[in-house]
Each structure stands twice: as structure tokens, then as C-alpha cells.
Length: 190
Image (cartoon, rainbow, N blue to C red; front, top):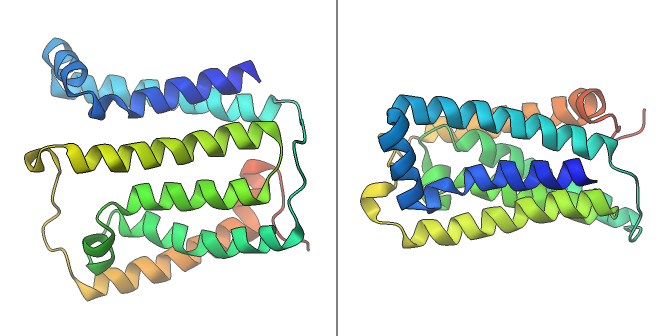
């Protein structure tokens, strides 16, 4: 459980750096923009590996047993989570309306998994990511407009269609094949 907690703290701590402008600016001044980004990427990957390993090896301490309907609700919530994830990279109406679809995808993913899992490791992992995404979204509202990167071409309907279709395809692929392969737990019974 300790590795999971360390992984969560380091991974989310790194991703909170943009909300601490002075710390980020000092690091950029010391390592340069490219150096900072490279260091950030390597540290994020290492922290993510630690987080995943910590979650995989954490003891199963069941806090509560979610009812079956929550599992179905979680599966339903994952559909828009995948669509928002794809929409984060495509300038379209979805991105324009939601403003920060990646954070919305993280919140939706975390909430869905909190509903479907009642073990301590799951509560720590998904609860931490939900809290992070809520905090970061609030922090974004308080940043200067010049700090928010605007995507040119926002509002393209074709990009929304691509986001929905690709999001649905990713959902099905993850549901049927990748979740059991990567997470080790089948979502649907064969």
C-alpha cells in the first residue's frame, strides 16, 4: 500500500506543478523549457509505473461492496469518459463547450471507478485522481487567460464526430480486451 501512496503523491504532485507558477518558472529557468518538459515526462512515467505497481501489489482490503447496479452505472459513465479523452486532442464543439475535456474525462473515470470498487487501494487511487481533477479545474479558473492554451479551429463538427466514434471504439476495445490485459480484471463476463 505504501508504494501506491508514494506513486499517487509523486504522480499527482508532478501534475500539480502547473498550478504552482513560481515553482514551474524556477524549474524552467534552471533546466530550460525543453529540459523541464523532458524531466517532467521522465518523472511522470516513473511515477506512473510506481503507481501502477503499487496498485497491483496492494493488499485487497474491502471497505464496502458496491451493489451490481453501480457496476453498470460505472460502465455507462466510461462511455463519455472515453469520448472526452479523445475530444481533449481534437478542436471541436465538445472541447469548446467542456473547456477542459481531459480533466472531465479524469473526473468521470475516477467517479465511475469509485462507484464500482469498494477496496481501500481503489478508493485511494480513484479518490485521489478525482480530487486532483476537481482541484486542477478550479485552479484553471483562477489562472491568467494568457496561461491557458487555446486550440485553433475549435468548433469543427467533423472533429466531434471523430471524437465520438473513436471514443466509442476505444471504449469497446478497452472494455473487451485491454482492461483484462492491462488491469488483470475482466469488466464483462465472457
